[in-house]
Length: 222
Image (cartoon, rainbow, N blue to C red; front, side, top):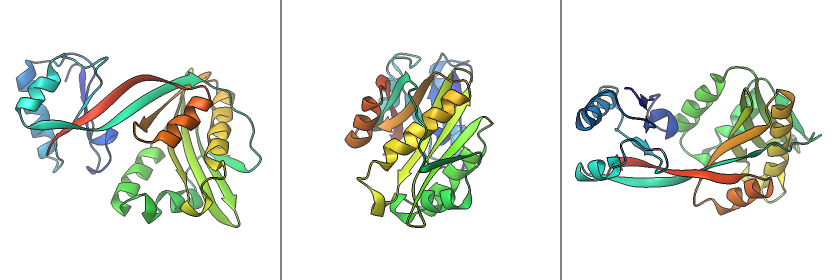
């Protein structure tokens, strides 16, 4: 709808089940909110809006949503930085999410199975060039991550470490392997999203040269 983009999958995860408000809608604002709500409800999905204060349009959208009973949740940072990857012998980067990757991604410690399936399906739709990092220790998938390359940019997502293998620096190794893949695919800079409360992940990415570009939140009715 003009500068608003509506995304829907099975209704679980945030970014792919949300109206992104990154420019003026193609109709009067209240009518645009009505249309977005109807679009999601017709698909059995709770309406949600993604608002980034730096780029939200119109600027008073938060106030309009508040009057309708919406509130903000899941504050998230978008971080960007120059790529400085390095080959990691323990991290194999595959062109697709192989079964071992999927098994760790769907581990119950990370959430519901339906949420994992939705996210895995989204990762599988990433066009090439793309990379899926997997570190295996003691015969078990220990850490994973994904990278999508488009032009000069590499996007990082799906970073997970098995509970039994945490605090060993595996997330850093997987990240560096993906950054190295991104460099090889022609990218020179990267971006990622991380929840604002995830201090350890933010510290990791900051130590790899990434800085916060902007913050956003999801808005939904309680």
